Image (cartoon, rainbow, N blue to C red; front, side, top):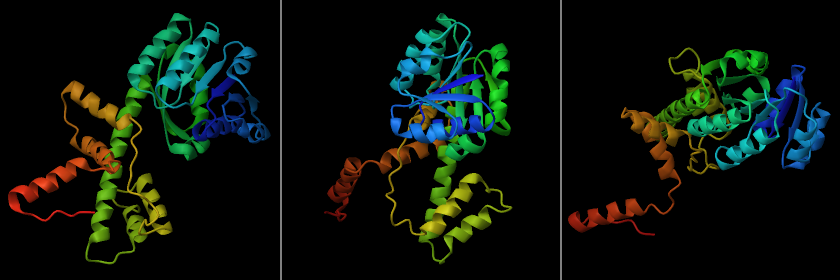
Length: 298
């Protein structure tokens, strides 16, 4: 099977190495040509341009995108389907919004190309050693590429979800849940950190992660980071948001349902990047105006 990966960043490169380990022929293109030597030393074939990558591809190729969500991925899908043959398979393994994937699936269908949206979880270590993948696309065509997912994923770590869009929809909700779980861990350890007992915080994370109800990979990562820097003095409390939490909250509103934990975790991330804190200044000033409360000033 001829597999060609566009986007050899941290996830794409580890995914490629995973496939190479399983005996697949893997080619790739990335704007960063600095990875060429490493990629080829590990058995891949590097192309310096998209045109070159597509020019000598084999019949019934699988083109796999590992790119940032949004315009970059959507434009690349348009370029790919124009250069692909009928019956080829195009996979978007990034974190695209499911509505974008639905539109990209229509673009591909018009050219006779099969489009699969694949939500990928497990981080860079998962991409390299065994990922978790949620797959949307044509059910019959999926059977042709099922061995790819058996190779790439941990045992029971892939799930065919349904039509195009369903893979990225499920990954969106997965990431919303992830927001809430990380927020709960952060809040809990904040309480412990400020509490009256002088705990070994890495030890707390370790015991939480052995036999307790809240044991998890995230708790294991918490132990690792607290062993390295218990006070987190070198970390700024700024939490970027890459989009999936917002999309989950939007879906909650669309369905007129309730997801307060996920939503609050998203709002906490927004608050963390607000350096101006204008709203908080208004509230502090109002307290001073009606109650004479002291206002802290720079």
